[in-house]
Length: 314
Image 1 (tube, helix red, strand yellow):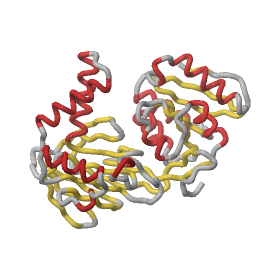
Image 2 (cartoon, rainbow, N blue to C red; image 1 turned 90 degrees about the vertical axis):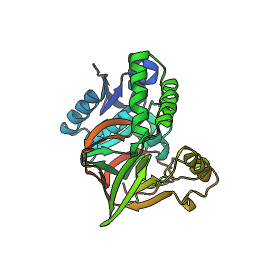
Image 3 (cartoon, helix red, strand yellow; image 1 turned 45 degrees about the vertical axis):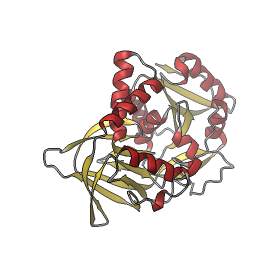
C-alpha cells in the first residue's frame, strides 16, 4: 500500500508495517505530515515483510530517488540499506524498532519527529558496510549461540504467541542449557586460527566491549571488520568474560580474541558440516561455508544530524 500526498521535494519512505506499535496507517500519516513541515513530499510504502522492504527499496533506487528512508528496527533498516548501498541515493533512518543500534551509533534521534528533521535538514555521512557471502550487514554478524537463540525465539513467537522478550529469555536459557560448540577455522591475513567456540561475532567496524558502552561503536568509517571469538570456555567462563567486560579488562582475558581486519574466511573443521546458521543484523539464514566476510568501505551515505560529532566525508 502506498500513500502519496501533494508537496514539492520528493523522497521514498519504506516502513515495516509491524513497527511503531502496529498502527501503520496512523504512522504513515505522521510521517507524511512530518516531512510536509519541511516542504518535502514523502511517498510512504508500508511493507509486510523483508521481501517487500527490499523490493520497494530496489524500485526507489532504480527510479533515481534522491533519499530513501527506512522505518523500522535494525532488520528493516538492513533490508533497505542492502539496496541503497553502492547507489547514488542517500539513506535515511526512522528508528521504530526496539533496540535501534544503527541509529544510536550514528546519533540519529529516536523520537520520530526529530528523526524526520534529521533526514530533512541533516548532513550526509559516508559510512562503511560489510558483507558475508554477498549478504550485506550494517551492524554485525554472528555464529553459534546467537543465531540459535533467534531461531528458537521466532518459533516461540509464531507457535506459542509469546512476546518478543519473553521468547528471547526462554530461548537464551535453552541455548545456554545445550551450550553447543563450533569447531571453526578462521583465515585472517593469510594466517589460520583454529577455535572451538560457543560463538563468533563479526562487526562492521569496532565495537566497544567494556563497561556501560559495551555493544556500541564510536565510528563506522574506519574501514575494518572487528572479530570477537570466545574459546575454551564453558558457562562459567562465559560469566567470567561478562565480568571482564563490565570492569574493562576484556582485552586481557586469555580465552577471548579481539582482532581487526578487512577480510575473514570461516570454515568448519568437519566436512559434513558445510552449512551454518548465520545471523546478520538479527536475521538468521543458512549459509554455505566457507563464509567470506569483507568490509565495504565508504559504501553508504546516511543522513545524520547536522551537529553530530561523527567524522566522515559527505
